[in-house]
Structure formats: structure tokens, C-alpha cells
Image (cartoon, rainbow, N blue to C red; front, side):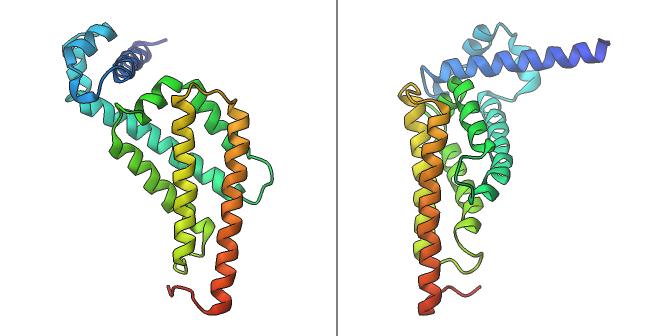
Length: 205
């Protein structure tokens, strides 16, 4: 490997150690109580190296959150078009496999010491992405909006409970259970759309 490749690999390893250290500390305390000194000591990285990559602890946390958010957003683009499928699509199993394999990271971000605003952004993104599959854009009824919110909050809450209770059910079982639940809610939303069309109670674009 050339010098540039070695340098890139070194940077990736350094960032990974800092990320892992932050996740470890978030399991013990909220981010506001974590200092750069203890973070770098745990990661075995100098403070100067930390500040070369990040402005502060919150900057590191935001970058971790951004990576997770973008990955989930991309996965939803693959997952949602499969809502007609009776069986959980590969994307759904991929999601739970990732959650299972990265349990410490996901638990820290979604747990009591994580950033509540991050979880709120996930919920908002999921509702925005899902509503087009639960109702025709611009023609959503209040009931469809409620059902979309119910589906999203139910899924996120189930994931939080699963992670925090030690993942007692397998990723495949969780994927199947939540897939069935979301599809059932979508059927209810579709029925609501039909009822609204029959009565003329449909929001205008």
C-alpha cells in the first residue's frame, strides 16, 4: 500500500477508536458529561489528534449521527417500495441485522444518554418517507396521517425496546413481526383513503 493509502487507513482507524470510545462512554453517562480528556485516554489517541478531526465532543457525535441517518434514509428508499410483499424484503432483514451487529452503537444513540433530537429527526424522516406509501401525496386524510405516525412511532419504539432489553428475539423474527404490523397499518390507511374518496372527504392538493 502506498503512503497515501497508509495515511487514509490510519485516519479511519483513529476515527473508529474515537467513535468506539464515545459509544462506550455514552453507555455510562450523557454526552454533556463526557470530556475530551477521558475520551482520548480511552481511545488511546492524543488530544491534538482529536482536535485535528473534530471541534469538540458534539462534533464527533453529530458526525456519527449523520452517518447513521444517511444510511437509514438510503435503506428506506429500498425498503418502502416493497410494501406489497407478504414477506419481509431483504432490506428489512438488513436493517435488523445491522442493528444487531452494531448493538452498542445503536443502543447508545437511541438510549437514555443519546441525543433525543437525533431520534426525533429519525422519526420525522421516516414519517416523511412513509406518508407517500400510506396516502396519495397532497390528498392525505387526518386518519392516514395518524396511522402513518402510529406505524413510525411503533416501529421506532419497538426497536428501542428490543435493543434495550437485550435483543431477546432474533433479527429475522423482529423483521417479520414489524413488517406484518406495518403492512396491516398500511391496509387500514388504504381503507381510510377509499372511505374518504367515497364521501368526498379528501384533502385537496
